[in-house]
Structure formats: C-alpha cells, structure tokens
Amino acid sequence: MIMEEKIKNEKKYKNNNKSTSTSESDLRYLSPIKIETKIEKKYCFFKKRNIKYIDYKDPTFLVKFLNAQGKILPRRITGTLKKNQNKLNSAIKRCRQIGLLPFITDDLR
Image (cartoon, rainbow, N blue to C red):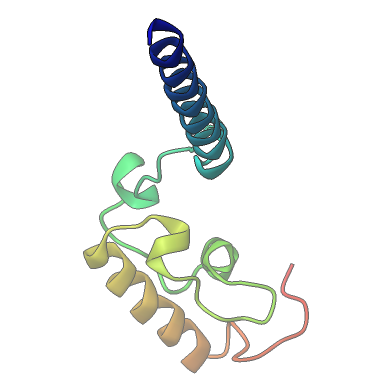
C-alpha cells in the first residue's frame, strides 16, 4: 500500500513538472522581446527658437518643412504645435502663390 502511494505521488510530481516546464517555455516564446530604443522627443521648432512670425518671403527657410515632392510635412513628423503648423501652412501656400516656391517639383534641395 505504501508503494502504491509512492508511485501515485511520483506520477503527480512528473505531471506537475511537465505542465510547468511547458508553460514556462510557452511564456518565453510568447512574450515580446524587449528592445531598448532611443526615441528622440519631438519639439516645436518655432517654440524652441522663439519664432513668433513665419516669413512667407523666405523660401530657403520654408523648404525645410517640405518633402522631396514639394508636399508640406505633417505635424506628426515635424513635431510642431498646431498653431505654428497652421501658420507654416499658410506661409508656404502664400510663398507658392507669389511664385517663390514651386507647387510640385522633383527635387527642391
């Protein structure tokens, strides 16, 4: 009778060890890999340099906020504030209207 209890306990012990080892290995493969990336915080270009007025007559400055096709870069990329992005958009559009910046181009830089 004692031998039967020992055998049952050993079976339980083996079953418990198998279940924990598989669950630990599953967790190891299912958990995402932690990669440390250095994310630079975006900042408003105009606020940092204390620029209150965006001059529409300066196309060399405005080109910084255009991509290679001549499209205006969005806030999520440049990091500018909404108020300053609206001022920038209107300055670029005015500059295009008076002919200092092209509407569409292949290469601005």
